[in-house]
Amino acid sequence: MPLLVGLFESSAARRSLETTSSHQMTREGNYDLEELAAKSLTGGGMLDSIANMANSILGAGIIGLPYAISQAGFFTGLILLVILCGVTDWTIRLIVVNAKLSGRHSYIEIMDHCFGSSGRAAVSFFQFAFAFGGMCAFGIIIGDTIPHVIRSLFPQLYKIPILRIFANRQFIIALCTICVSYPLSLYRDIHKLSRASGVALIGMLIIVISVIIEGPHASPELKGDPSKRFTFVGPGIFQAIGVISFAFVCHHNSLLIYGSLRTPTLDRFAKVTHVSTFVSLVCCTTLAVSAYMVFTDKTQGNILNNFSSNDTLINVARFCFGLNMFTTLPLELFVCREVIENYFFSHELYNQQRHIFFTSSILLASLIVALVTCDLGVMLEITGGVSATTLAFIFPAACYLKLADKNTPWYSRTKLPAVLCASFGVIVMAISLFLALGKSWTPEGEPKMCS
Image 1 (cartoon, helix red, strand yellow):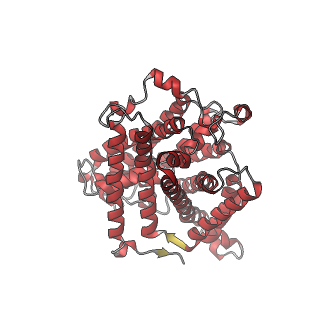
Image 2: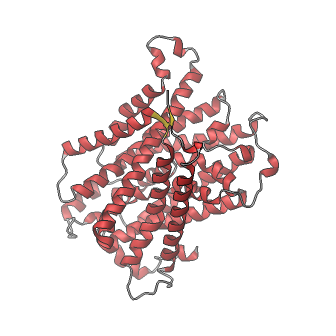
């Protein structure tokens, strides 16, 4: 870990890197002073960027972390949380360093610079797959949470003509997506979502507090075996790594968030990253430990499903979780749209009609998926798990190794962390793919359609 922390601490190297900003350059690599002047007036502050990054991390994945602890074992799970959070913090910053070393300002252009057209195609595919899969998952979660809360508040609602449509899963998904997520997705600048991200973060804190308070008061039949609390190693370590990695990944948003800073520098972005990942780690660890201590071997993939459907405070948490999903969904749509723009229209000026068309098309496609199924099945698990590992661990490290000093050996202090990170990513990706394909041959992998 000291190698990870100290990788870019050379003051000379830092000064040379900070002489340029990836968003202060045109696509040809020359300074655009008008763009820089405009950015200094329109960019967001550090708190805006922290809210966006923390919201990107504290998404749907946090709800599965108690399950990850139960799979890995209590002590192993805690160690994995800390290590993977540290690696995530490092690789997020590594992407920005790669952007500066290569003189490029997007993940796609960095991969294109390092590995040519094949690298450009690979990162475009994995970025779009991960972000679009997240959009679909968020839509499904909205359908699994908000209607449940409405039916709990108004038990007789389904009997009332016309109004009973508000207890319908499909209608609520469409309503929230079209009326809330769609307008937020039409923004061009990601820092404009910071207010929505701040609201979503408050909702996530409510979820954590609700689980902490209600866990000890759960019915005895819902609680797990207390003798299995302090386990060292569980049977599902690799599944836990996949869940934790998915929970922490926000690398596909990193350059967008960096570019939204009013004054983008490595030091300022490092502070944003450190604060965001630390806050996320505290929330994730608090939720994971407090929930696992109660439900142990009965811990489910969605910890809120461990509680009674009549639990008022947990229903508030379910509502907040749904709120978090339709304010986080636009962040993923930003990535999908940016991938398409950079891959197909990198040398063209902004076009409002194209912007609206792609925003509407991507959102409509994810909405359709969320409306027709309750479970994306094994294919979403494959694209999500593999994409998250590739984007978070393999690509950033591989690009740095390509851009770093060619005369420096791979086992040097500056390169060895990247070698280890890439190797770790390849191993986790291969095992995740193997486990997901294995599940496809069992009834567990069958798709679950909504009625």
